[in-house]
Amino acid sequence: MLQWLLGLERLGHEVYFVEKAGWENSCFNPMTNQMGNDPSYGIDSLHNLFRRFGLDERWCYVAFDGKYYGLSRHQIENVFSETDLYIDHMDGSEWEEESQQANLRVMVDGEPAYCQMQMEQREKRGEKLPTFDQYYSVGLNIGSSKSHAPTAGRVWKPVIESVLLELFPNIPPPVRAPWTTVMSWQAHSHIEYKGTIYGQKDVEFENFFELPSRVKAPLELAIAGKSTPRDRLLAAGWQLKNSHAVTSSYDAWLNYIQNSLGEFSVAKNVFVQTNSGWFSDRSSAYLASGRPVVVQDTGFSDHLPCGKGLFAVKNIEEAAMAIEEVAGNYNKHSKAAYEIAREYLDVRKVLGSFLRELGV
Image: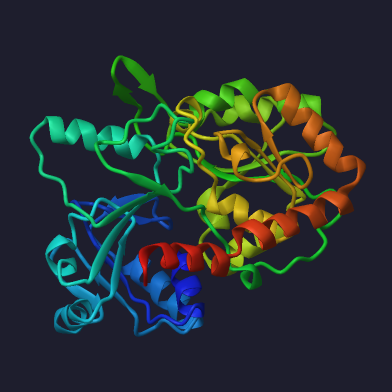
C-alpha cells in the first residue's frame, strides 16, 4: 500500500489513506500473536511509518467501537467531499457511503480469481455489493482469454504491482546469503467454485518441498500460519524465520531483502490454477533491490521478460535450474533484476499510465 500512496504523491497528487475495522477482532498484534479489537499496535506502526514519509496528517482509521484515529470524522468527511479519485483495495463496503462523494470510484482487486469467485458467490446469496466506476486487478490475465477465472459480470483491467525504486537501495548481498521469501502457509481458507477446490500456498508448496536438496545455496522462509509444518520444512533443509519479525517495520523488511541473495517463492494455488497473471509487490521490491527472483508462474510470464533476473517456473526442476543459473553469473542476473524493475515496475510509470487511463 505504501507504494501506491508514495507513487501517487510523487506524481503530484494529495493522497490520504483510510481504513475501517470491517469485523470484530480484526486487529492483529504480532507481539502477542493475537487477534482483537485493540488497534493500538497497528495505529502506532502506521503513525510512525507515515510520519517518516511525510504522510502523518494523511490517514484515518476507524476502530470497531467507532472511534476515529488520525483524522477526525469531520476532517475525513471533508476530504471525501473534495476527492477526485477513490481507490478501494478491498470490496468497498466499509467506506461506501463516504466515497460516493468522490468524482471517480475505482476498485483494485489484490486477490485475483479468489476475489471474483467470492463476488459471484455473494451475489448468488442475495448480497448487494458496492459498485464502482472502474474495476482493476493485479491479476494481469483476469477478464482475458488467458485466464478461466470468473469476472463476476464486471470488466476488469490490469494494473501490475509496482515499486518506488528509491525505497529499496541496490547493495551487494553478504557472503552465503540465502534465497528468501515471506509467506503465509494458508492466508485464507480454500474456496470451491463450480465443483473445483482452489487452495493457498500450502497446496503448491508440496511440489517444491525438496528444493533445498536440489541446490547448493541455502533457502529460507519467513513464514507464518498455524498449520505450518515446521518440522517437515526443517527436515527438508529449509531455514525458517518468523515472518512477523522481518516485516514488523520498513527497516526490518528492507534489511531482510538486503541480506537475501534473491527470492524463491510459490504462489497461491488459486492464482496458479486460474492462470491469473498475479505478480507480487514483494517480488517487485526484491527486483528493485537487484535481487534475482525465481517464482512460480501464474501467467505473469506473458507480461514480464523472464530468463534473466526473473524466472517463472512451473516445477521443482525448473526452479533448481534457475537458482543454479543465477549462481553461475550473479552480477548479470542482479543487474537484469534491477532493469526489469526500472523498466516495467517503476511506480511512476505504472501509476502514471493507470491515472491516464482513468482520465485523472
